[in-house]
Image 1 (cartoon, rainbow, N blue to C red):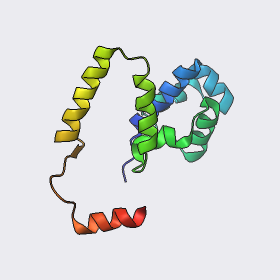
Image 2: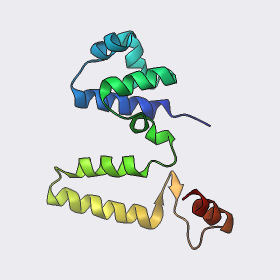
Image 3: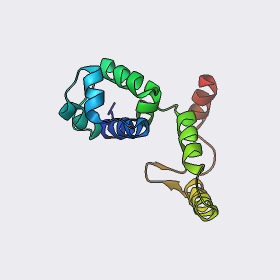
Amino acid sequence: MDINYKAIGVRIKAARARKGVTQGYIANLIGLSTPHISNIETGNTKLGLPTIIHLANVLDVSVDELLCDNIKRSEKIFQNELADLLQDCTAQELHFITELIKVVKKNGYAGEPKRRGRKPKKVAEAEKAAK
């Protein structure tokens, strides 16, 4: 399994920016160097579970919010993120976003092509069992 450390870093940086604190502030709180925090935010270094937990606690976010790009069942996190992004959109921006979503829903996107027709029986059974 490949872990997308760049995506984790982007989410950590965004959470830090929302909180309005510096890399140095975070580094001091969790006992790391400022350059190490910078490397985490750019995805240039791997981070372990204790570091992820420390960061989530300091940034007041859930661990799944930081890891959601690497977790298959993270729809709720993406829905909440989208709702937050849409809150201050103009009518024109909302219209554009709506049209964009329609195109993606119809055609799929590069990361996951849209399936036409019914799902394979084994996939449908696995999804049903997981619910």
